[in-house]
Image (cartoon, rainbow, N blue to C red; front, side):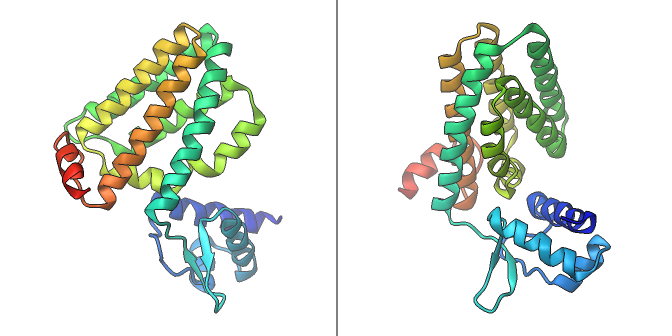
Length: 228
């Protein structure tokens, strides 16, 4: 793969994951080539790679668009994330060392700082949250889990879910990380796995509530029950 193709891939993927290119948006090769500073051939190669990652879909007329997933498809992604990240948390807990634990505590402290300002720093939250989960994968020391999770964690839905979070949701996510840290400190794999499964499942419901127009507050529970 050429350097120009890699540059196009990185640029288009970043725009999709960040939400700059929204679901269903057309992906014209000429416009993307100009944005990425490359010719159309590297863009075409990049779009094929992104299609294989299910970030891009191609119509019958061979036009490319940002993939737009249904809520059922999104739920599948979160279920897979829960299973895989739960397993990673289990392995990480059993392999935890003092240096790695301190790094995780530092990362979670950065999350706390990002959400404690009068206007929460969502981009800072996302960056530190990515680092926290990345550290868990590193300690888990499973290349296979890392490969399987790489295409699930960096999905646009993660970005969109966080940007729909209210302060209560952000704080709840932070507290769940504190619970993970407690399990890691005790090297209790089963406990860490259970917390991670619940953590990812709650994130799915945050996305689902946002999709159906429900508020990210405790009052969402009543409205969700009314919707059913």
